[in-house]
Length: 607
Image (cartoon, rainbow, N blue to C red; front, side, top):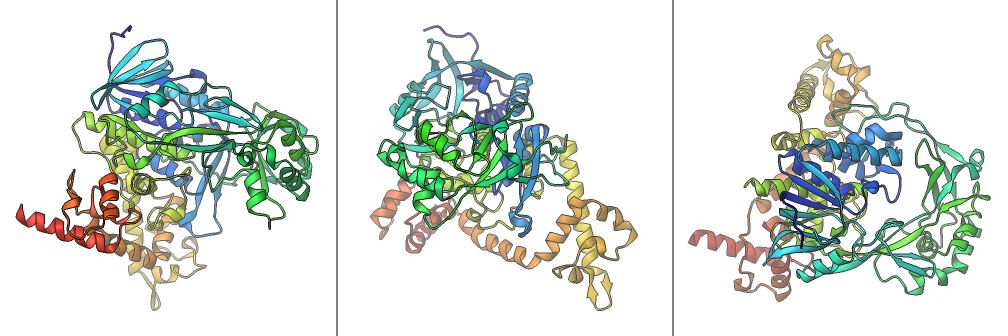
C-alpha cells in the first residue's frame, strides 16, 4: 500500500460541526492534525435547518465559545436574523438563536480551517482503521493511502451505512448528494464496538418566490441583537424575516390517506427517530387532538430564494409532499426545490466511551457527534471540541478535561451519554440539567473560560475582560447589599419583582456599570434569584462527596457481597469513574451504592 511520508499527531475523520471543532482544538493546542472529509465543498454543511442555537442549544454554543471553540464566532459573522428565545420566562432558560446564511457559514468555517497552522485538510474517503492490537495507528482510504497518527477522532455524522428513504425509494447516501461511509462502518464493527441504528429526517426546501408571504405572519429578529461569542467581533445582523403558517385538517387528511406510502409506517425504516423533532407523519398520527401544527419558513441565505420549512420533516413520496404542502395557507402554489427525506445510519452506543470520549476497548480512538447517538449541530460541536481537547491532553500527558454537571451543559450532555446511554437521537434540553439556574447562557464565560485560557484556546486579553467583569459584578452586589434606603438595603428593594437597577438611586461610581447591560443583567439575576441559587449550590456541595469518591479502573464489583447481578453487570459495562456517576446509572439502587461505599471504604483502610 502506498504510504505518505508525513505522519500526524491526530487524524480527524469527518468535517461536519464536530470534526471542525475537534481539528481546530488539536491544531491550536500545537499538534499536527489531518482533517479528512469526503467532500471539501460540504465542510460544516448545515444538513438540516439553517440556524444555530435555540433552547438549551444556545447555551451549548456559548459554552463552546468560552472554551475556545469556533461555532459562536462563525455564526456571529454569518447571521441574518437573531432572536433571544424564552424572554417571557426566567433568565435561566433564555436561549440565543440565529438564522444563518447557510453557504456563508460553510465558507467562513472552511476559511478558518484552511488558514489554521498545524492543520491540513484532504478530500479522502476513509475505508478502515489501522490497528495494532487494541491501539489505533491510523486510517486507510478508498484509494489505498495509509495515513498514520497517534490518535484518531471519528466524527462521521449520519454517514455510517447511511440509507435515504423517500416514499418507496431507498438508496445509500450519507445525506442528500453525498456517498455513505460503508467500509469504515464495517471496520468499526470489527473492533468489537457495539452499534445500533437511528433515523432522522428533514423537510422539503422550497422557492420563496412561490410563497404568498403577504398572507403569512412575519417573524422579525430582536431590536437589539446580541453576539454569541464573548469576543464579540461582530454583532449579528437582522437582514431577513421568517414567516409563520400552520397545517390544517386537509393537510392531515392527505398525510393519513398516504400513510402506507411512508417508509416510517410501511416497515422499511427500522432505526429509531427523534422523539422531540418528529416527522409530520408522526405528528398527525400521535397528536390527533391537535387541529394544526406550526411551520416556520426560514430563508437559507440572502443570496438565494431557497427556504427551509421548519416543522414538516417528512419522507412521504414526492407527489404526496407536493399535495400536502400546497394544502397549507400561503403555500398553495409552492415550488419544491428539494424534497424531504428520512435517513437511517449506524451509531455507536455511547456507554462504550470514557468521560474523555475515548473508546474503552480501543486505545487512542475518540468518537464525537452523531456517531454517539446525538442530534443537532450544537451537540455535535460540543463533543468535537471536548474530544479534540482530550486527545491533545492525552498526547501531552495531561489529565483529561471532564466537565461536571454543575459546571456546564456540555458536562450534562456527555455524562448522560456515557452513563445512561441512548436508544434514540439525543437532544439537549434545559430540563436535562438539574442545576440550570447555575448554567445560564449569559455566564458561560465565568464558568468555563478559565479552562479555555489554561488550554491555550482563549486569548489572555479576553479572559482578563471576563475576570474584570466578574469583579465589577461582585463589587456592585456588595454595594447593593450594604447601601440602605430607609429600612431596606438596595438589594432587598431590587429583589422585588418589578424593580429594575437602572431605575434605582445608585452612587455615581456605579453609574458606568448601570450603563453596561451585561453587568446589570447579571447583577439583577444574582440578587433576584439569590435564594434559589444558594439552594442549588447547597445541593451541589452535598453531592460533591459522591463525585469526589473515585472508583479505580477494573474495580472488582463481583467481590462485593450482596451486590445484585444486574448491578454488577451494569457497573462492569459502564465502568463509572466515581460513585456520583454510578448513582446516575439506570437500575442502580441506593442499596447498591451503600454496598459500594462500604467496600470502597474498607479497601481504602486496608490500603
